[in-house]
Image 1: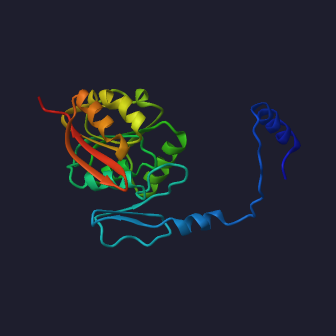
Image 2: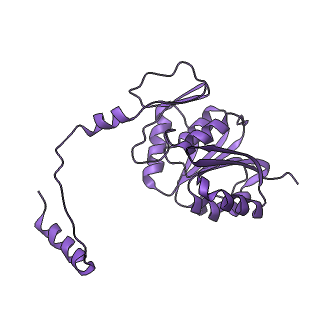
Image 3: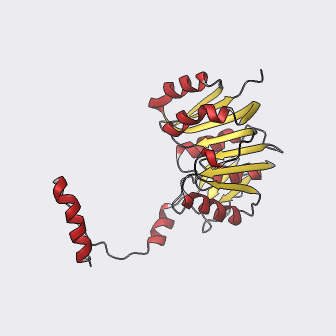
Length: 232
């Protein structure tokens, strides 16, 4: 049933703009069951598996993660999250300081913790994301990740060994210089959330900011850039 007040308010907005609206009744369903049916486990080689709590545990991976995505991004299904996790296997996280820039579900920060990182900061501009990260930390018996809600500016200026930035092109382009200032010489930066068509923009901006490209991976039209801050 549509409230008459709502209908009137909506029309007051649409009519001056010469727009029309329509509505459709959708019968009630078990939306949780629908979501569960669509959520499939994800496996990155024998390195990490990502599943929901109603899936059986992985038996052939080093790290078995349980993620409740809710309204946050990052379950491993998207090519960008998959690419970053795959590259994380090749890096040394033990006793390292890590920053997850745009944490979403917290999946990358949680994996970094499992890999032995000693200091982990994570930030997302969406409160729903940092709340979801906290839920997923508890689900995976992970503590010690410092969460921040907001832009990069809300995170105290720290020098990290590794930065994980799986966000989007515009945020990455606007943040490359600031991230350079937050990483130790020789430190690693994994950048994803970038479409193939934006390859050259990222390459040029990163070079101008001082980053040295170590590796570039592609999956389903999405890119993952592995950069380092030079030692010199």
